[in-house]
Image (cartoon, rainbow, N blue to C red):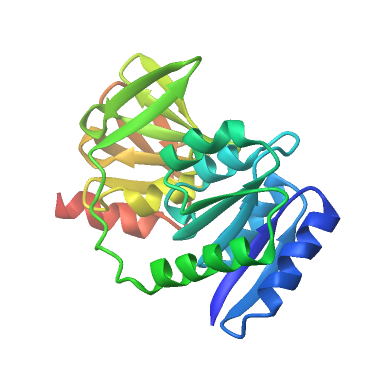
Length: 237
């Protein structure tokens, strides 16, 4: 069974897509979402292989969802919209297909068959990232991971600390942690990931809790959950 999710802020549109998917015995619809925020939560929890994703939604649109998911994104994304102006951007985002409302059953069937073939293909092995791409105010900045001292959680975003500069990245900490090389970076707290070669020492604070002290004097709390992992990695390094 292929696990699918339907995301659209219009209930009628969601119902139509679900009805078409229910005709295929190889498809299981695991969630329906009426907003981008709901989609982020559902996709991370359900891990579907296929997503039918509306573009124009309030607060968090379809492109925002895809960017925030990062490597958590389903392998097959089909954008569904009533506007053709987003087609180029959709394929730049590596969407599998672009369904323009209203579409007929035959067009939907072709899209679904294409998605099934795509999902059946073997996936290449992932490699640890070496550069992070930060988009801000119409600019794109490439940040080498070798320059990143530590990473801080900022709600749905992550803040990269690079020397005296910071960059806000539209990726979650959980997403980044899965992508980063674990021999180079380590999660020390729910709100912090540190580059191991920037840690100069570990100290206890007034409360008796451990802190990682970086070469520039930055002090980061170490949670009890992550302390054994950090200790093991710092000793190994």
